[in-house]
Length: 200
Image (cartoon, rainbow, N blue to C red; front, side, top):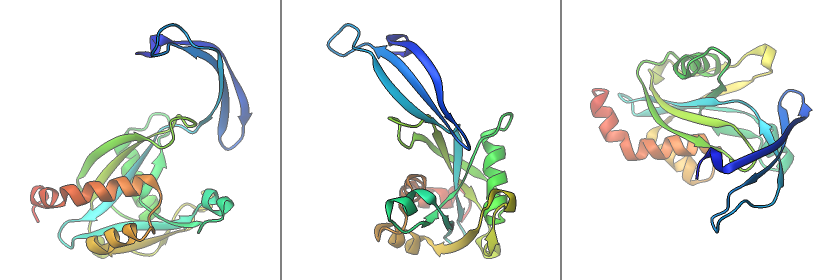
């Protein structure tokens, strides 16, 4: 099926604040044939984003970040999450520009080479957000400290881990944000090839 198999009846903004919630009424083709009944869906509109796992192939270390997240807090989980660098793409920016900007803003890192891992939807039933995930070559020896933009209320701690320790932390349930899980799993599968191509 394609986009032509969907009939959009109405779209309206249900809420506009820091983020936006849009309400849709639509119908779509069904696998058994014909058009299904009208359904109503509210969708959280955030825009597209990028994420990057900074990796030092010489030291075999990854650079993660830790920061407060309101979603886990409201759910009763630990709100200080171990994640990878990420940010929303603003109008007129390329993915590579955002990856490099966010690495500097959130971790104080200059990315050397970058490699696209994949694109993914975090929760396609409720979000339009599409995240493109990268791995970026860095010098982890210079990584550390607290970063983030004051006017955005960011308070971000850099965490440098040997690759094996990062994988152990993920296995222990310390990395629960999906872009970080995807990036670390990708690195586990491609690490030796990546180190050869990045000359380590």
